[in-house]
Image (cartoon, rainbow, N blue to C red; front, side, top):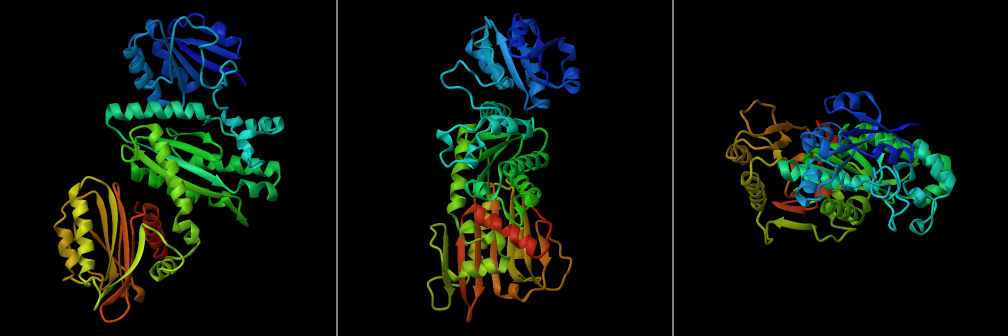
Length: 473
């Protein structure tokens, strides 16, 4: 397959250097750049900044339309300011002339001259974890590499490219005051896979998994490998809730891939956003990795909540048995106890105050009110919030009546369990909180509460599914 590189400007010597590496270099007039990119299978762009008018504008335009394309800027100017501006505009790297075979890298190749070579291409990704627990100490057999090159999608990038793109996206979002998100996907159980499946079946599974995830994400999203068993996706101009939606879509899309009789592997997703969770790509990746570890050690996976219905999960959490977690607590309130029952009202006020603190921040809030009636205190409290980006739903039994609730949506559900259960599920951009209190007798309640975001989100997902509610994240 011909590997085509577009050259903008003079780019003296570039054609001769790259031709020895198997590339075909096409020199394109500045005015025809976008037309050629639309029609041709260009794998990289080289732009001579000394011979191109408004070079940074061109770089920025290409990067916006083709976020995964490698762009090399070359110049005789060694000024740090110009180099920084080119990188912020979207250049993948900046090379100072004179250009030679050693310094002209397109990021699509593994350097053979560096003492610390770049990570391999997407097709060469270190899936050797499938075959060895000591993957980092051993190499993949040549036949596996040859076959993997054929099956991985062409837009599934290597670790070097994804890292560089992540850094550039952080600079761009900082400059233009935007958001971007990172989704980290951790695949476990490969050691069991090699016992159950043959080599061809494992490669087919990986191919289908990656392909399905890429088809679910947008064309502007960049996806690749960061290290063994971890896939990363960078979502430009996407806030935290947007990344939550993306994760939900991916989970649904891969259901048929990950489960064929029994799960091929355990897949954990972690999503983080700039600037909510970090000030740069490296910090975001570290935060996402930390959250994967938190999920692995958390109740949701340990107690198998993913495969349990909503009310069974609630029963387990209220029992307080089988777990000891610092961020989740079972407790009792009510008659003769330290906390009076109006403590529940105070919890609602706390959430409303959080929404009022910054009404423009997105969130989702489910309030279980047992029974919805016109004199319900919650209804009056909601009116005081005003217009907010948080979606508020009041859940309970009652006669379906059209009240004027501009700031909330009542959900009438006929279920006796709701008459004895009070709950708050709040998932916001800055923090999350969930509390469930079930009436026992004489104004006494058994309760639990948590600030773990994945547990809160999981409860919301289960609740929506249990009652066939429209997904609102």
